[in-house]
Image 1 (cartoon, one colour):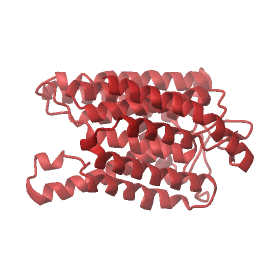
Image 2: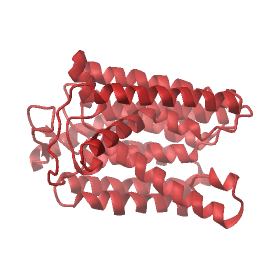
Image 3: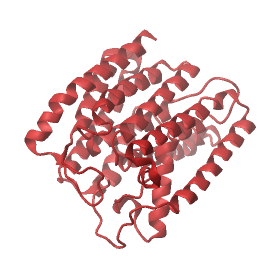
Image 4: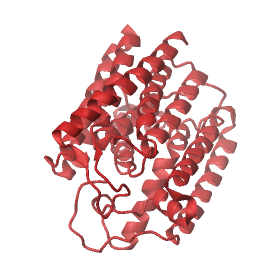
Length: 352
C-alpha cells in the first residue's frame, strides 16, 4: 500500500508541476487549439498537456515498479509513448488522422501482446493455439476501441481527465480486491496523473491535453482492463468489470456511432457537437453541469463493477443486462435531445 500511495503522489505533483512549463512551451511554439464551429471554447487554448500527464505517470511507475514486472512496465510505457507521439503529431497537423486508428493503436496493442498482456476470455473456453490467437485479436480490438473512445471523448473542459481519474480509482479498488499489486500501483499512478492535470483542465481550462494525452489515457485504461484479474468470490463474469468501469466513454462512443451512422456519417471522421456532454449541456445543464453528471455516471458504473466479483454469475450477468438496457434507453432519449448536426458528406477531418 505504501508503494501505491507513493506512485499516486509522485504522479500527482509531477504532472501538476510539469503542466506549467509545458503550457508555456505550447504558447511559445503556437501549438494551441483555436476556436471553431465544432469547439466549445471561445479563445485559443494551449495544447501539449498530455506531455505532462505522460511524464508524471512514467516517473511514478519507474520509481515504484517491481523488478519482476519490469518487462511489462517497459512495454506499457513504450506503447503509451508511441500513441502520445502520434497524437502530438496529429495535434500539430503533421499526420493523417487514419494513421492513429489503423497503425498507431494496433501497434501499441501488439507491444502489449508481445510482453504477455492480453485478453484471456476466449482461451478460457477454447483451449490451445486457437484460443490464444482469438484472444490476441480481441486484445487488439479492445485496445483500439478504448483508445479511440478516449480520443473522441476529449471535447469539453475536464471531461476526459476526470473520467480517466474515476476509472483509474475503480481499477485500483478492483485490483486491491484481487490482490494485484502491479495493477493497483499502475491505477494509483494513473489516478495521480489525471488529477494533477485536472486542476489545470477543469472549466475554465488553462490547457488541453491534446490528442496525445487523450490517446495515452485511453491506452492506459485499456491496459488496466487487460491486466485486471478478479479473484474475489466465485463469479465467472470478471470480464464485465473493465467494461463497466469504462462505461462512460463506451456509452458516449456508442451514442455517437449510432447517431452519426443514422445520418449517413462516418463516426470517427465526422467530428461535431453531438456527444453526450454536448446534449446534456443543451438540455440546460451547461458545460460544467454536463461534465459533473458524467462524473457521477462514471462513479455509478464503477460502483457496480466492484460488486461483480461478489455476485454469482447469474446475478452478475443479470445486473449487467439491466445496466445495458438502461444505457440503450438513455441513447434513445439523448438521440432526441437537441444537438448541433454535422453536414452530411463533409470532408473527413481529424478525430475530435
